Length: 406
Ligand code: PMP
Image (cartoon, rainbow, N blue to C red; front, side, top):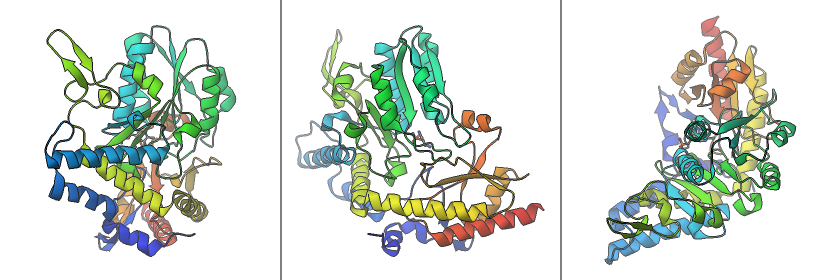
């Protein structure tokens, strides 16, 4: 069933405001999404009614908040269909989750001469932690190349494996141009070589169903703030058997079992990887976001966003001097483009004056920009609360930009 767009827009109070005396058009969703009332209220309720530090508290409020937090973990488990609650590690976000694995997995399994495979369309957060690990260990980064549409070259991927390959770290969806990578197939390939796979799901979980068991991902990582949840919270899913073997990343309170000045033993999963007071309010807000997505319907969301992408691509293609990047056959509703002889930053500044929020620059994907010989793009990232009328307004604003520069 099609989504009721009036109801949906009412769920997001921020969308009602005026910017520069025009109705806000929010097309910066790949950077962060707006929050529905359900998420805002879930966190507000905890602060007003039950706030107390979690775990090990014997008093009423601590017990209630602990229960809410652990229920949130179960909600997230169901959201991505993990096998066990304790495979869900709360982190501050995608970057933090990738760094955790780069450290803990790297400490345990990566040695001099080993190799790690990433792709040419990764976010900096899925490049730099591996580069640093390689520098620390004397290991080597290998890169899956892309074609002109921004799709990974599968035959080249297969050829990158060697007996030294220790891990593949790959984005599910590229934030710069929206390509959806065939991760299930790519995981199968890696497993044939007995190599585990980490998937950066920061741009994927908010656009359609993700089932980590069906994908057979070894690690799957995402951020709350990009899936209509709060900032400062994210999820690292890892298979129990692998997480059990890894050493802890950060250390301190919560993640310990017994501490003496001679020796410390560590807590069981998931707590081994959640040092310090966790962002329990964020975790509860994130679960509310997952509930909101489920109630709205991930299939319905995907269908609406596909329609928006088709309409947006068609309308933008009508504008002379506009070049779209990333025309992968399978992609999410991101339109990344440049305008002849106009710097993306200048265009973005003018587009903002029409109340339209787009992002300009390299989108934390400098190697991708280099591949195409550009400095950056103007990126309009749309989600299900956006409309055809908003796309029309963007097209009008782009025409105005062109007029001003001519
Ligand atoms: N990976 C991808 C694909 C992203 O789009 C982003 C955020 N733009 C990140 C990682 C990093 O996410 P965060 O800033 O929430 O840690």
